[in-house]
Image (cartoon, rainbow, N blue to C red; front, side, top):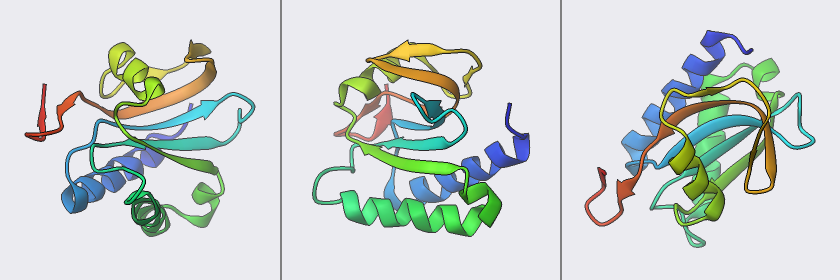
Length: 132
């Protein structure tokens, strides 16, 4: 299990991202598949699309640099940016809620999650930007 201060830093990161960009469907850090000792940062929001993907990637990267120590950043293997309609995201939204901790292997959409922290998990009405 990871230290709570590490998780708190990700909470600060998502708070800044939502302030800058708007509501988020899913924000999680997961150890998945062959990456058992590194985290994958997963972000899904209605404002992520092919046109905004690069800009959002740099926003997330900037926040990781701002909030995490170098040693903590070395624990991040990937940043995954997804539209809410992606099947993996839909399954995560169905199965989890904000604050969930995944402590044992969980198979979802052909992926194996070894450990995970679900910081934000909301179905959002994309037209009105409100949680449903």
